[in-house]
Each structure stands twice: as structure tokens, then as C-alpha cells.
Length: 167
Image (cartoon, rainbow, N blue to C red; front, side, top):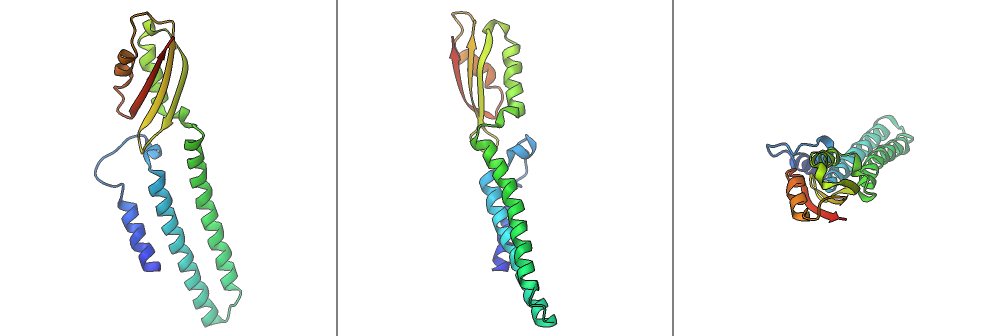
């Protein structure tokens, strides 16, 4: 079991290292890949702790070592799980509004004062480094089209789906 987990961790650890940068720092990580990686690392770590407890129990007669190592493993898994849960919750609760892409959208709109004002803006993650957005504008000219706004905002490659509402 330990060997399989180590090999799996090596494979998963290198799965995203394929010679280019997606930008966005830690925000570019795939939570599915990360959760699989954390799972096999946690499994490997608890296996090592169990082996150490078994060795200590056999060699030194320390029967108390097994429950201590079990508790240490549980704490380790809990710490990793809380971090993963926090990041996953941010995605599920649409809390990506602090991502730089939001400011980039605002800058594009600010460069076009003729569009009017932003009345609503929502951005959410739809992939590793891919975002969708809804942009609502009010007070622009009658001849302004959603396609024109999408074309201007769409210069940011991480925006893969843009919905524009004009009012």
C-alpha cells in the first residue's frame, strides 16, 4: 500500500508540471488533482506512522505508540482536509471576486466610459485557470452590442464564457 501511494503521489505531483505557466499563482491549481494528491500523501503518511508504531511496539514494547500515531495521522489528515475544504468552499460560494481577473474586467470597462456604468459583475471559476463572468452595464449608447463588449473583455484569455447584459 505504501509503495502504491508513493508512486501515485509522484505521478500526481508531476501531473501539472508540464512546461508552462498558467499564471494566477495558487489560483491556477486544479482542486480535483490537489484533492487526489492530498489523499495519497495522507494515506502514505498514515502508513508510515502505522509502520513506525508497529516497529516501536515490537522493538520496545510500547503498546501506547499505536494510538498516539493514529491520533497524529488523524490530525495530519484533518489539517490537510480543512485547507482543501476552505479552497473548495471559495469556489462553491462564488468567492472568486478578489481574483485579479475581476480588476482586469473593471479596467476594460473603465477604458470605455461610453459603455456606461457597471451595475452587476459576477466572476466564477469554471476550470483550472478559466473563469466565466456576467457583466451588466447601464447607461451606454443604444448602438452598443453585447458582442462588442465581449470582444473587448475577452482579450483576457482566462475568461472563457462572458455574458453581457445591457440596460
